Length: 233
Image 1 (cartoon, helix red, strand yellow):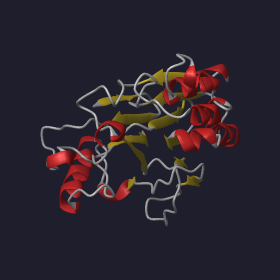
Image 2: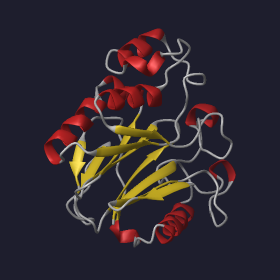
Image 3: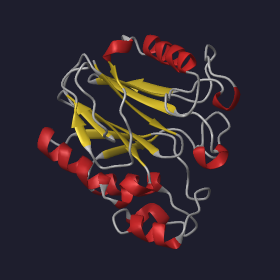
């Protein structure tokens, strides 16, 4: 796991294994996703462990329904109806936001001097549909622009080889996603996009495909998911 905090928020990116993880087989052992075929009881146990490590009650953690979209949802309270959305944001200090990934980019954003956090799930389709611009618009509407962005473990360009047409779709909006000329590197594309706009951006963790301690859909097909969590202090 990778974790940290500042005066505004605490954050965490999980890995594939945990000393107390419950999942078995291809989901071994700390799968956090309910939609991948893992036993519901095992996922529930893993989520309870995660909540305890994050000092957050399970009922205060908001889990998104991801659809590879650019849809954003403001979370006012943890018990509101959650519609499908790949971007969640809140100013409520009693809510923890999450996202899930297994090659796509998990993004966390934290405002420095006001109560605001955001999570996003970014795959090639969301990237091509300019999800980065949607996120930037939320920053502009809800914050003064003093933001730190964390880009968690994701597949790198050397491991993510796709059709040239897909690369073209993404590089129209994230030019640096194909800097190496080999494959599609969404994390690098997002890093340069947000850095060029003046935001502080940090890369957290390695390539999911290359790291055995991370789930990778591209590598294993049937597999679990990592989680990213953030909560205001």
